[in-house]
Image (cartoon, rainbow, N blue to C red; front, top):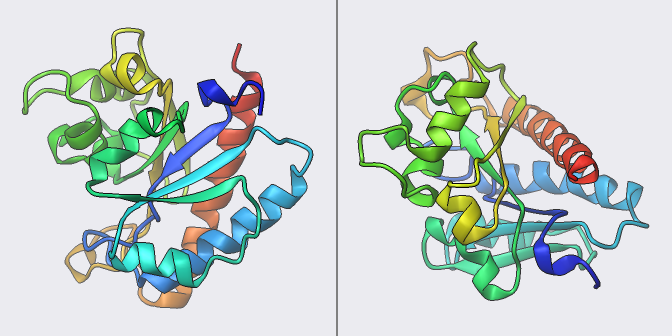
Length: 221
């Protein structure tokens, strides 16, 4: 449709928490996503320019879970096969520019720590050397000083010099503080004991993420 070319109302994201770091059951992660996205798209059915674009590696458990549990028969939600997690920042080359990218974050990253360990910095934002904050890390730590809260979304608008903006046409990164089912995180605040808790926690993540995305996409100049 007209105006879709700039991706101003498009959100790219992974299936939250479905990879080995966070260790949520991919089918639980996919069902939680669909349970929020379906009513969100129904609520905004007049808004034809919205795009929600999942990017997952072909053949991965997350990709298969999205296919198996896709309860959304709406062309505004897409599942794109990728060959690497970094593909999420190259959707413009496939004719699907996304002004917003959602990334999983832990509280350490949110406070500006460990930027090179973050998927967002390491794979999407190539600015600066391996040990530096880079454009995204700098923008995040400049905006937010206090610890993040579980399931909340923190929006960071990128500076004009950021490679994500200049190359990928992504102007806003949405950090989502996600739950974990990884036993290695059992002493962390975001560790959840079972799939039921993970399902509920992920629903909150998606609800906050989509509310933030929609609000920001409507208020962008």
